[in-house]
Length: 71
Image (cartoon, rainbow, N blue to C red):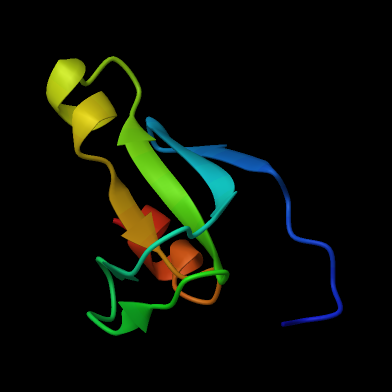
């Protein structure tokens, strides 16, 4: 884990990314590498995106979040 403090929430380009700790495995939406249990990741939803985004958010590693939000 990095020693720098990660922001709890990032809002950019209509997306809202919230820092979470994984309880089970996921896949990063940007790099397609696994997110392991107990690893920190960002849960990303589209602001005003509706129920589908809330039920099925994208997930990204902290190192991948800037590339994901750039689009």
